Every structure is written in structure tokens, then in C-alpha cells.
Amino acid sequence: MTQTDKMLSRKEGGVGYLTFNNPERHNAVSLDMWEAASGILDDFAADKNIRVAVLAGAGGKAFVSGADISKFESERSSQEAIDRYNVAVDKANGAVYDFPKPTIAMIRGYCIGGGVGLALCCDLRICSDNSKFGVPAAKLGLGYGFTGIKKLVDLVGPSFAKEIFFTARQFNAAEALAMGLVNRVLPEGELEKFVKDYADTISSNAPLTVNSVKYIVGQAVKDESKRDMKKCEALVAQCFASKDYTEGRKAFMEKRKPMFTGS
Image 1 (cartoon, rainbow, N blue to C red):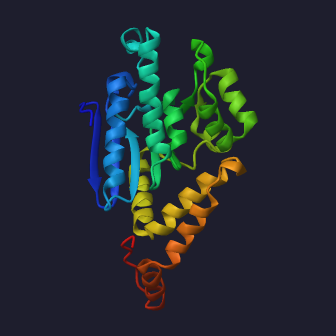
Image 2 (image 1 turned 45 degrees about the vertical axis):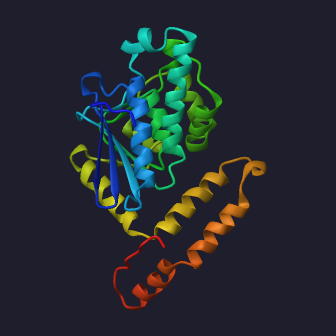
Image 3 (image 1 turned 60 degrees about the vertical axis):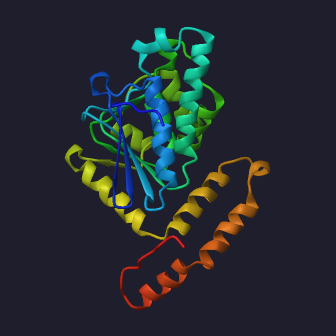
């Protein structure tokens, strides 16, 4: 796993927190940060005690403000360097998007370019009311691939996706909520507690149910020919055959909180 002080991780109960820690550059992401993020997520995925992952940015002013443009000369100046950088970004985004457990982007402040791309890979996006969103590709002359654009279209629809890219401007939290880009908007001082409570709520629910729904929703947005319906059916059957299903029924009858183990 790549080690860098610009990526932080911690575990609290059933929740793993991954923090982009480059506040002096509004958490712009360099190659080693993308590589470290993949390693942290692999660790969270393998840890049976971690049921939810929360992604955040350090410093209070930004979630992630995209690629670290100051590193473009060293990291993206040749075709070979561009390819390596793109592989690292794709791997990190893929590690988030394909993460088998729920993911929450806790967004405070700027969420720009690659930050939007990363947030799109999360299951839920919860932001503070002073957050700003934008994809400035058209101001930089950057090409944007099909996969990233499709994730945006799936979330906000084709018309808003075009508006975000065509204008390359920054949208405020209210606009992001109206477009469906975020799930919730909170006053800045309440964001952290709300996200913690949401993550704890999800982590206390039946993991087999939650994770099966995540997988099935992921299949639902794919082309019909690419869906794995057998796995969808198997995951549902696994829920009904689980000890957690028995525990859920018992807890309901006994009017107590269920204690789910994921088995």
C-alpha cells in the first residue's frame, strides 16, 4: 500500500473514514494520493468490522478540488506519465465505485473536477450549505471519457450533465440539490454529526441486505445485456437464508434493536 501523509484513514465502530489531506491546495490530488486511496479502500473492504466508508477532505475548505495541476509537468507531461496517472485515477475511482459496502462523500467547500468524479463514485453525497461544485474541463481543454460522463448522466440526467460541462461554472449547494447531484444539504456546523449518524445508522442495519441492494442498484443502471441477474438472485436468497434474517424477525417481535453480524 502506498504511504503518504496526504491520505489519512481511521476506523470508528463500523465506519471507515478516508480523508484527502492536502488542504493548502484545497485537497488537489496527486498521483501518490490516488494510489494510497486505493490501498486504504482495499483495507476497508477486507475488514469485516467495517460496514460503511466515508470519504472527506481535510481543512474545512474543500472536499477534493480535482487533480493537482502543479504536478502536471512532472506527472502528466509525457504520454507514459499521463497513462500512469490515468490508471491511478481510474483505479481509485473504481475502488470507490465497486466498493462492496456503502460509501458516503462528506462534502464541505469546493468539490471540483476530479472531486465531482470521485463524489459520483460514492453511493451518497452529503454536503454543507457552503459547498461549490464544478467541472472546469472546458476551461482547460481536457477531454472527458464516457465512463465519467455516464455516471453524471445517470445521476442528474442528460440536460444538467450538459449544463455542468458546457458552462464549466461553479454551482452552489442549493443548485446541486435541485439537480440531484447531492442527497442532502446541511448547515456547515451540522455536517459532520449528520454524516456520522447516517453512517452509524447504515452500519447498524443488516449488511447482507444493504450490500445486496447496492449491488442490485449497480446492475440496474447497466445495459440489460451486461447485468448479472443470477448474482442478484443469489444475494437475495443469501439474505433470506441468513442468521441476520432470523435475528431481524426476533428483534422485531421482542421490540428491541437487532444485532446483525453479516452472517
